[in-house]
Image (cartoon, rainbow, N blue to C red):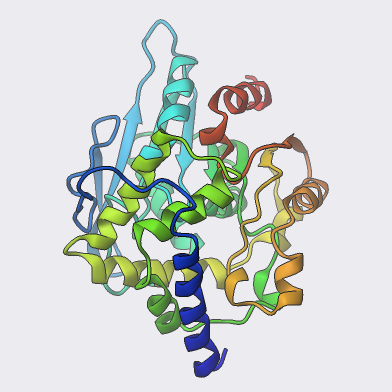
Length: 343
């Protein structure tokens, strides 16, 4: 992408945001401000810390560890992996549901996200995040588990299944991104600096409008606002510079490290749970019109992925968007429970 084109794209994006100023109800009351590690935002369970060294620096990985009651425990573990614009806390409904079904539930914030460390210099890769997650689980004495990944977490979950198949009972991907290779489809590549310039434009309004259209298919409920403010509060806070820089590094990782070509190598039972109204595609907004038109076609992408993955099952939600676990928790949890492998 040339510099003039990139500048024009930024200006057009800002104009588009202004044009959608009334697309969703704004937050009521004062806007919260959170720290760079989401200080000030309460999670639905006590936050634990896994401290380790990676790439020659000390890091801490925040996580939730929900134990079932002894009478309901089934001896199994589920690991929930969040997406790019999500945190461990956004799994609240699903973590409580799985806990009630007898599962021990581990929900980490990946390095670079939410309540975990945000190193100024870190070579982000899905392989590195997979190793970090496995190290966390091993520190807890957990060697066998089900992995459920949503959005970017779906890409990470697939990478974990490819790297550590002996540890996974099952792979579950919930509206994963990366079911197509955006670069190969014609999306222009951005430098990290260009991603950073994009992230410096983030506001609560922008987050809300995007979530409303993509996650919830044009619907909006008051309970969704907390997730807007969770993200926006970090962008408003004293750590804004490190937040925007981390986001840029992470977008570069997502864009440049496709996993779709390796679906045929997956050797664990796989469940795909897909809201068909999803249209998520990294880089769509700065792509030529012909490229935009063919990206993010989840009804096609979901079926293609299911056909490519050995031992895969596909469950579609025709009226749901990118976050079916949040848009229709009851329907989603029912489908999830039916699709989990039995011992």
